[in-house]
Length: 548
Image (cartoon, rainbow, N blue to C red; front, top):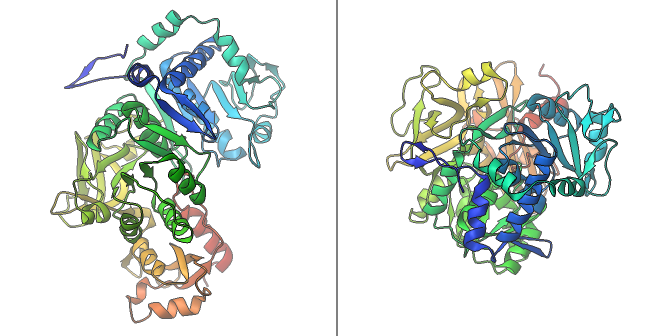
């Protein structure tokens, strides 16, 4: 039975029992499809309960952190609900982490148990963990003695190979057989809705990740959005977004359990595989950032498929996203836009299918219930009038509890009145829709003039030889900084930097024109589909040298 307490009018719930409710409503309906296999909601509940018992048998206590490091697969879905059901806190680790990254997050989160896959394609997670844990042979499989990770008691591997003194997924399930149904139910009933559900590390687009603490109240955000968008058991979601990222965790795994929708799970995003799967499985809802949809548009143009989406989700409003979002409406069907961040949860503003095409393409939606927003001048702190850009401030029930073990960073992000200072730029329109315009740290100041990277990226994408563009800053002795454009070729003509720069002259303001154009085979990306501009800024310095 789901825990309830009351915060104002909305009953607090805990996430573990959501799956019990789904199994009771839609037990025989297919919930998950993966590589030709399928699991009903009843199957999902059964596998989750087996795993939850295994966690209890392995000594996982309420409030402890359990780290998960693996690519998308059905076990990920079992894990996330099992951890919640026993009152522990999930720590999803980025699958693009390497030894130093995983060492930092494991140690900083003080996780007591790690669940990982041994290998995925060419990526050997077991070998990376061996490098991270040189003293893994100390202790036993039930009581590791790791100098770097003193609180890490167990490591569990899914796969055929594992490290010394670690255990297998099957061993953990076998150990759980000793836990009774009544013991598991008692543990689930005792979970505090105010306890930590997740420590989600920020994407790291601009530096070292911070662990964002969220409790079970985020269920409300997802539940209300599922109702707002009319999601039901008749929907089929295509899930290629990484499960460790908020977008996939919230808008696919959680929302499918709340609405009864089926999800077709893919290991990772590949545009051709995604479209082939969407056609074969009758997918009705697809999700993604502009990079995902740009790849999908390109793949569909090369080889059209018959796809009939009810809608897609595509956070829009940024200048660079608008042309992509507009084209998606004609090729795949309507999309809804929105804005969110790890520190306040996903889609805290959102459009719906009743809004006009212009609103869904050019804006980021209305605030969700009981979220407050302010747009302020970041220098003076004064509120900006409608239509004027400023920093987005957020206050509401799902604003994070803070950054894990980082009180100074928490105090810098959330002021004394409870306003989260997002570091994002935006404005409110006359129609009440908010427009997310980008990260303040990505804005350029060229000789005192503000330059929006998104504006220039959209402009460059309009050139036939350019598929995609990313604008970053490069230091300049006279102007402080100037734009540098990294581009991906479309294949329709050669990328000639002088011609691209020449095409800009006389058409746009001189301070906005890139001083350098650099072609790359691909952009460095976060797994959620955002360009890692911190890496591009470093690459610009590496390739162009220090200014002289």
